[in-house]
Structures are given as structure tokens and as C-alpha cells.
Image 1 (cartoon, rainbow, N blue to C red):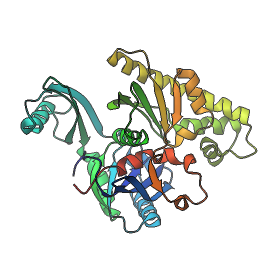
Image 2: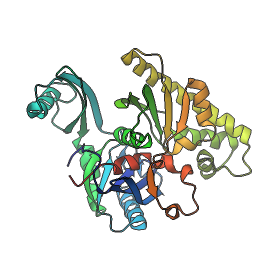
Image 3: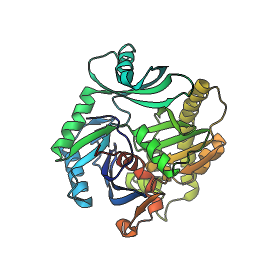
Image 4: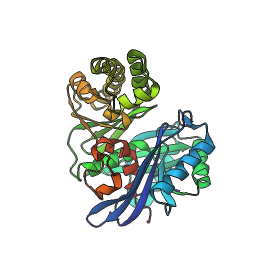
Length: 355
């Protein structure tokens, strides 16, 4: 079991994104000339199935995973999944490595000397982010997963008749998905990848095409649902539809916009804190672009609000921009209206499992 493996090569990889509110699955075939989407699907989970990353209704989750797999491709067995941000600790360190022969030993020894990595109940892995030319210095990302959290998900996936071959982290899956979206030509400067889920929101910072750090924000799509439900006097189902950009004709659009702005201001306050942390660590005053993913990416007028509020370009993630697929796979659904929901799943499916 590995927390990291290289991207690329040929073969087929299945990414399973287990969110607090929905399951997303993506099966990518790795080809010489890119990627082909063989299967994909999205399924809502019963309310309360997962809360704060903790599995509350285990049987319901197993049934949902099994149903989604059978619906998309019953032959699926091996999958890549993510722990999200729950039970995950990460840190970046830079130090000198004389040669590749002693890299792993040195990195893991260094990790053991650092709190909170010097504990017995974690699974530790690392990824070399970059080597600095002209010196022996290497920038390394350390990631530790709490064994109790990791094992609960591993056991669940096995009980769903699947084989987990790689465990990833949402922030890295989102980073890989965005790299594919950029077609290998990453923007210079700082990109903030804002993943707005139903229960959690995270910001992943990319600097000059390289992962920098990630931060969590307490405001999520759930707040937008509650405010819309309260202010417009609609049911939770109608509020959820409005958040997805599918408001019914009876919804007052001015009230909807005001409600979105109210929740978006609270989201922006959390973004401000994360931006301040990043700017302080990098001694910079600018964030060059925000990219929205997750279900919250489609909240009506949110992108425009954030663009005005933070004075930077805002766009919605399109992880399938450079993926080939048969349009019949999506039926009558507009791919651009759901693509951002698949960002993490696509990033997971970019992992190469046959190495």
C-alpha cells in the first residue's frame, strides 16, 4: 500500500472519491496520446452516512459504493481512493541529500525527529517536490495518515469487494487534475485551487506549477443550502437544486443572489485567512488565480462574487478538458455542468497502478 505513486504510463486506473455527501468514480485508460474516460458516475449518499470524515453508516456506504460500481462498470476491482483532509498531517522540509541511495533513509529519519511525525500510530510517506540546481538541497513533502482512520476506510473498501491499491490525498489529486487541465503547461505565479464540498472546503496553493500547501475552511456548500432554505422559504431539496444552479422557476432570483452573497462573504472571510497565511509564508501580495472545484463551484453568481471580492481571476475547474470520451457516456447531461464535481476523482484516476 502506497500513499504516492508516479503518474503516467499505459493501463487503466479507477479513482473513487468518497465525499461526505456524494460518491464520484472515474475510470481512465492511460494511452500514449493522453487519457480516455471509460466510465464515470456520481451518487448521493444518505444523509449522515459520513460526518467530518468519520463513517457513521457503514452498511449504507458499502451499498452505495457497490451500486455505483455496478452501475458504471461491474468489472472494476482495483481502485485508488483518497482520505480527504481527515486524519492527514503534512509538512514540507528542505535539506541536503548526498545521493539517491540514502534519500529514503534520510527523509524518514528526519521525519521521525519532527513533531507530529514522531508517533507510532501513523503511516508515513513522502514525495520529492523539487531539487535545487547547483546545490544538494531537496524539497520534500511529508505526509502521515492516522492508522485508525486509514484502516477504517481500507476495511470498508475490501468489504465492498474492491481492492485499494493506492491511498491518495484530496489536495494532491486536485493538483494532478489541474496539471492535466493545463496540458502540462502550468501557470506561473500562485494558483489557489478552491474545492467546495458539501461539508468541507479546502484551498490548495500551487506556486509556479508546484504544490505548495493546503488549508481547510469551515464554510462549505452546506451553509449556502441553509441560508437559501431559510431566506427563500424552500425545502432542503429545492435549496440543494438552487445551489447546483438548477433553481426552479418559482425561486426569486434576486433573493437567491442575496442569499448566495451572504454565504459567500463568510466563505471569503475564510479565504482571506488562508491567503494571509500563504502570502506571509511567501512574502508576496498577490494570488494570481482561483480555480473552483467540487459541487460548490456551480453555485449561481459565486464565481463572480469571488472575482470581485478578491480582485483576481476566478474560473471553474474542467478536469475533462484534455480527456477523450464518448459523449453518450453522459447522456443528456451537459459535461460542463458536472465536470468540477469529478476533479478529485479524475486526479485519483491519473495515478498509475501497474508499476
